[in-house]
Image 1 (cartoon, rainbow, N blue to C red):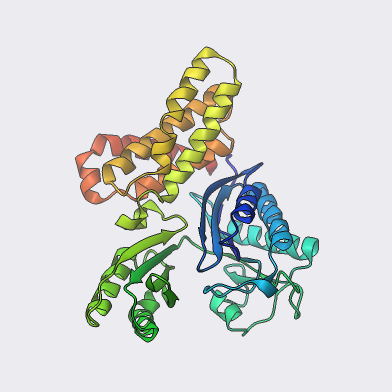
Image 2: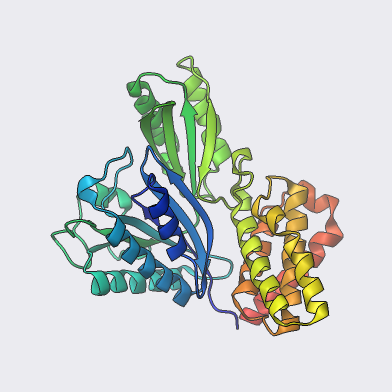
Length: 379
C-alpha cells in the first residue's frame, strides 16, 4: 500500500537575500521530500515554498526549514508589506490524491510538536489542526494564544502557524498606481461579495501599483476566474483595468486560470515523479533502463512548465501513468516517485472539462481504469 502524500506550502519571512533564499529552498529537499517551487517577493519580503512528500519526508523537511529560518532571520530587523508573526511564518499541510484530511491533521500536529520541542518556538494551530477552529486571521489579529509554548514569542523568530487545509489558490491582481484607499475599497467589496464562498482579499500598495491579493480557499465554491471577473467589474466602476495577474505558489489543474500557465501543481508533481523514476532507472545500470530514463527526462521540462491547455492536461496525465509503470522495472512501484506520478495524473484527470472528455472517450477511459486500479491497490 502506498503511503500518504502531502503538499507543504511553508511561507518564510525572507524574499530579498538570494543566498538565504537558496539555503531555505535547499532545506526543503531531501529524503522523502521534493521541492516543487520557490517563489520569493522582495516587496512582500516573503518566500513561498511548495514541497511534496510522504509524512516522514515532509516532517523532516519542515524541521530543517525551521532551523534554517531561525539561523537566518531576525524579525526585529525584518520589514515588508506582508503581515507576519514568525520567521517561518505559516506551514499549511495539504493532503494530495487519496490522502485524507485526518492524515494531514496528524502530520500538522507532529510538525508543530517537533518545532516547539526542538527549537522552543511557540506554535499556533489553525485550520483542520485546530480543535478550536482557529483561522490565520485570528492569529494575525492577536485574538488567540499559541497552542504550544507562549504566551511570549521567540525573541527573533516569533512564532510558527501550522495548519492543515484543502488546496487553495493564492491569486494576485495588479491595478495601476492609484490611491491606496481605492484598492482597499475593492478588496473590501470583494470580501463582501465572495467572502461567503471562501475568498479572502487584501490590498497592498506596491511600487508598480495596487495589488489585490486573494486566497481562493474553497475551490468547490469559487474559482480564480470568478475572482478575476469580480475584480474586473469593481475596477471598471472606478475607471481602472487589471494590469497583470499572478499565481503565488502552485495551482491545481482543476482550478487553473490562464495566469497559472507554468505553475500547475500536477505538472510539478509529475516532473518530480518523472525525475525520481528516471534516476532510479539510470542507477539500475542496464541499457534498457538507461534508454527508458532518457525518454522520461525529455519530458521533465514540459511537465514543469505545463500550460493551461486541456489537450496538454490529458497528454501529461498519460505520461505520468506511463512513467509510474516504468518504475516497476526497477522495483520502485511503491516509492515516492510513483506516488507523485499517480497524484499528478489524478489531479490532471480532475482538470479535464466535459468537452475534452467527449473528444477523447477511449483515452479518458484508459486513464480512469489506471487510476481505479491505483485506488484499489491503496484501499
